[in-house]
Image 1 (cartoon, rainbow, N blue to C red):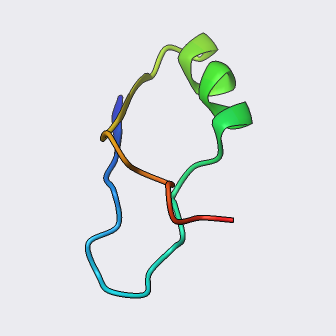
Image 2 (cartoon, rainbow, N blue to C red; image 1 turned 90 degrees about the vertical axis):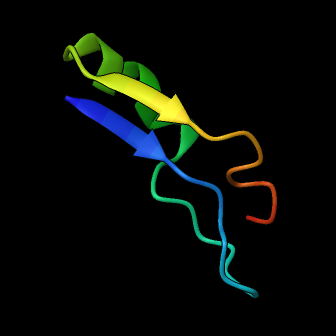
Length: 44
């Protein structure tokens, strides 16, 4: 499965659909993970 993580496009939105520690686990299970440049920059 291909999983895409887009950057936030709505004003005030800071959430991201995936946290970095989960990426290796998804790849290990055979998934492809694509993260848009800038995704998560506003997340704290």
